[in-house]
Image (tube, rainbow, N blue to C red; front, side, top):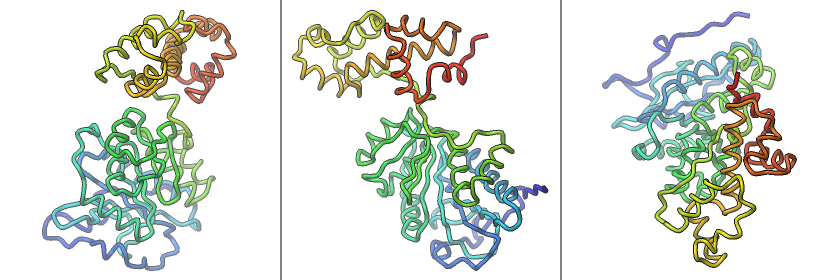
Length: 352
């Protein structure tokens, strides 16, 4: 098998520097010249602050997949797109020549926090145009914020990095968050979670375009796992204390201090001087969880730390975090993390 890679500098720059003709949206909408060697064209959107490692990594992944697929299976054309004062145009092309017809567009992760990301109206308008022309729109991690600006995922399921989920929900409340998932496929829209989930999205697309055998060969060559299903093993419980509700904050402090010995949460409303219904409403509004769910999250977070840092038996850890029934602990642990305690320790444990 021969693998040939063309350095980025040897690709086609359809635009840049200034004064050089660029590809326009009209070019994108033309019918691609028939080419039996190309099975798809994937456009990668370079927006301000995007992660260039993902841009180059996806470019290499798709090129490698084409090489591994064999001469008869075809190749994936990859192009890079960027906005300037004249609109969005192609700045690099792996197969220069034929007119562009994007089958997929990917908004990659960002290297800056979503709260610091500037609006991207030109990119959002271009994404809407590509979607209207038949392209499948994809995002990775904070790229979901650029995708959400289009309005195309309002009322649709979408995922992003688990740490940015609340920010996405606050800025785009019509989006139906599915942040436990690593990749969410809505047919014409695909979103991926973590900052390195571009590998999961890329392999998923290779599977669709070139088949599972090529996907697995690509994963093996790159020494990465096949597409993962869940972010839950990686997500951390990050409690909020800055919500401004002093009574609820005191209840949270009580839970954190007494999680191991608490027999339930029935007395928390009385301690806070509220009716049960009022306490439940205010607690969920402040923390995002019911009191029972919050207690479970605190206990499982302690169990995760013990599994990562010690060799303490699982049954003992269950007892130490507040569960007298190891079977019930295992069931809850898998519900919240998507994997059993022993498998979690095998994947994340750092004890000697």
